[in-house]
Image (spheres, one colour):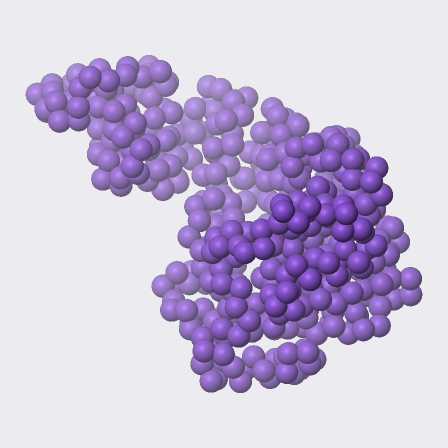
Amino acid sequence: MLPSVKDDTLEPLRERLRQQPEDAETRLGLINHLVSHHGKIGDEKIIAEAMDVIAPLHPMLDALPELYLVKATLEKAAGKWLQLQETLEHMLRRRPDDANLLRSLSDAYIAQQKWSEVLSVIKRYRECLPDDPNGMDLLIATLLELGREDEAVRTADAVLRQRPGMDFRRKTGFLQQQGQARSKGLPAILINTQYKSGTNFISDGLCKGLDMPFCWITLFNLGHRIVPRQLEVLARGGAVCQQHLPPDRDFVGEISDGGIDRFITHVRDPRQSMLSAVHYESKEYQRSDFVGAQTRARLPDNYGEWSLSERIDHYIGDAFVWWANWTGTWLTIAAAPPNGVTIRLSTFEAMKADNRGYFEQTLEFYGVSEAHFDWSLVNFDPKPGDLHFRKGATDEWKSALTPQQRHDCEQIMRQAKVDLYL
């Protein structure tokens, strides 16, 4: 650890350094104090000062390896990703099996969208910590980012079969909680939801109310590929799965063949869903982690400078078409599902009007007695920020969209046969 300066304040240290600029101990003490100060208030000026103070010590880094950690901390705080990458690469030449350094290096690569390098580092990380679900999560997400979907599915399926107890994208104690729910006779509950339609409110309410764990079956929320092992786990019963499933009859057949013969498809007016998505993704765009990097990678470079109306225009010409088709196709499938499959259609608007009634109808659809449901654990009045909740509005789009945007959306929805909302 670096020398800790507890009794001095910043100004005396700065003055001492001005008088003795070659004094490494004073320089290290000031850096340590600045880093501690930054950790409390996140002042960009303090970060910049600390980086200036540390610069003259670069020739001493090999003699003071602990100084690299401080340098890396400052570079990450300042968003100096290439410098951070170089610092960590140097440190790893001395400590090639340091899992923490490997994970930090992956963050530096992610920020620069160097996905091939991320993949290489994460594979090394998993060799160090093969049972770490976070490393597994990042490996799968990186494979998907590189377009290697088949490999991602095979990898996820193989690892989960080899390590059935790994809490990969599920909370600790999943198998035990699922077993307890199965012992009560609780079934597998699958909710197929439209994007930004109260998704987290639904899954959180069902999981808490029924004391059932959350289970996933596709690789990521907008996934089109089922991980076979996960479908087997869900089909056992005693778990809740909520995902945005692809609108495809063959996909329904795959779910049915895997043991799921009934599910709910939940939709929302695509115009309001779009508005919620634009607000949500604008926040995701600002994140400095993997999610933020993914969001920025699929949006235009100057997206951050656009107005809300410009972002809506972009969405209408891009994702809105897909989601309108998603809604229209699922409306058609739900009206005439494949043989042996029962699909219940629900809407965000009806849920908003009577959210308790929504859960009552869901329990009835799955043949679950209300005696198994603890209503006191469900948050029926979420506040902004809870469970990705923003406003829960149903017709905000009427005032937020321009006349041209409303016209364009209606034309797209007519073509997609979203008759429910026209």
